[in-house]
Length: 137
Image (cartoon, rainbow, N blue to C red; front, side):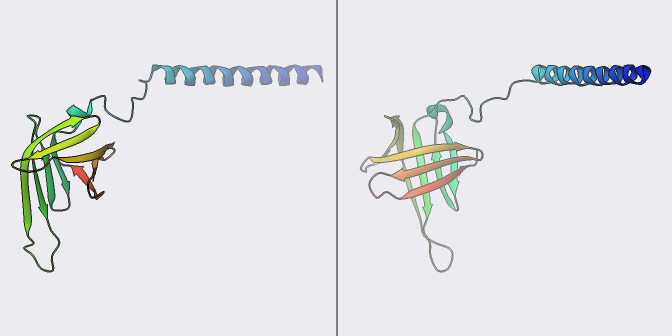
């Protein structure tokens, strides 16, 4: 009987040790893995905004040189639908995009950038219309 208790105790100790060694090994593996990075890239909005953004057939191009082109396709019953094209300069001020069209009135856009997928939500402060653009390049 004593021999059976001794064997059971030794088996229990061996089992406990194997669990603790396995747990340490698992923790060590996690420590060796690279830390997960932030879900958003580390870049300023001034760096993130330039590029081509699309919403359906409409395109919003912000150049890193401060120039922009906005081409909007209006809904219609049968294609080809009418398009409008606006060009000018853009800049960021106080967390908003300021568009100055050639020969036109300044437009102020509130915006948010999404990263997965990369999107640009733009709200015109004048008419409160919001458009969501997908980054295309």
